[in-house]
Length: 77
Image (cartoon, rainbow, N blue to C red; front, top):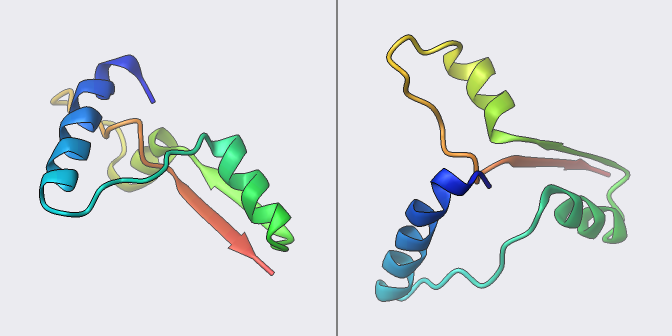
């Protein structure tokens, strides 16, 4: 996660915990891919947020950008 996004993540985690839904874990792309592989998934791919944003919203002329902390794990058996 980019340093600029860390305060927003901390605030979201506090809000989740206050509503009774604490976040229990955070994984790097390498860690979550390893866990998926260890669980028996054969085809494991992590797609970082910046790649997802580029595919979905393209180049934003207004300077908006997606947060860097939420990538996608695709795992197939």
